[in-house]
Image (tube, rainbow, N blue to C red):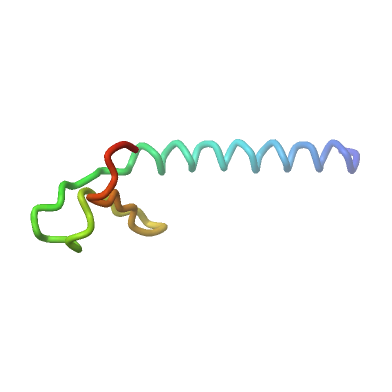
Length: 62
């Protein structure tokens, strides 16, 4: 393979991997309603390998 074809193949492989990982990450978020087990500012939260996503009580729409 020439240098530009190799580079293009590597970029395509990287993008495909990123898309697959993003789809898996998005589908694995499970929001849990706060019923006193979380910080009082949180209405809902979702845990993920990259961190915790919180929806605060002060938010009316997301």
